[in-house]
Image (cartoon, rainbow, N blue to C red):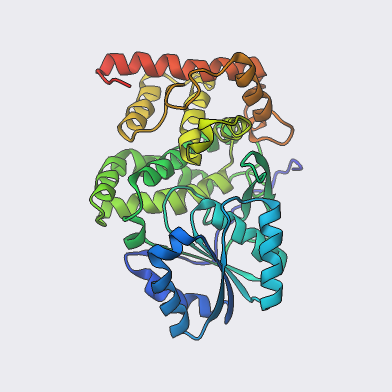
Length: 375
């Protein structure tokens, strides 16, 4: 990405959030097109497909459901593009989690169709952005794919999201807590954001507000999710995970936390079963260490992560038996050309990243001993 002095802020055209808003999906989608390719896996369809179908049909939106096969890969996008072409889809609907959403954005771009995103969890900040994280068919990070515009519609039904496993909300909180840690580092380095320019005051402010809301409301929202109820704190955290984090990372910038996450995907085995946010949580603490964050602030993150059941030790990350060779593979992947680890005010070496990954484990264990928490 070329260096520039331009400030750039981007966002979706419309964001709608609330309990039961899926009943209004047809109203909002019908403005974008009357023929839709609807991408959703079987699990998501079983949960809320009936409600979405009724809403679309009620507004005379015809749709063909395409079963999402689970990976946001180039092959999957190309497969679904062919279905959309046959159908002459005017709008692509991504209904599900982060990978289904990222796939839908890629399909919409290739079809030059409108894009509507309906997340069923608040587990990532993928819904609002004009990019997709592309993986290989085996789940290894491949690249970021950038699009000409953000989604035309993001519709978030908190009544559906509160019924998702709390682990997904915790993962989204971890992903969102990386937002300000990375954005402030990128801004310090005068690095470009994901929109190809410098951060605006608004982009920076959103990232900072995201962190503030999460530290204030995360546990209350998590408890509400456990009870499958929608409360003001739950609404606030869903918005922080989805909208504030999405705008904040894209118009603020990414740095080492997500690069280390991407490095983790180079490893196979049990770590592959962890969510995006769970791996980002570990990467965030590693970046805080690399940034020489004061101990008190570092421990605020560790305290919340532990309360949410997020991995902050190598054992919890399923890497207690990882060799130095494994960790160097992570570090080298995190430092690839074009990775967001280069958006820092200092240069990193593979050795520094390996040591930071080990330091997360050391500091987390010391903190757990101090507060009387067992692994």
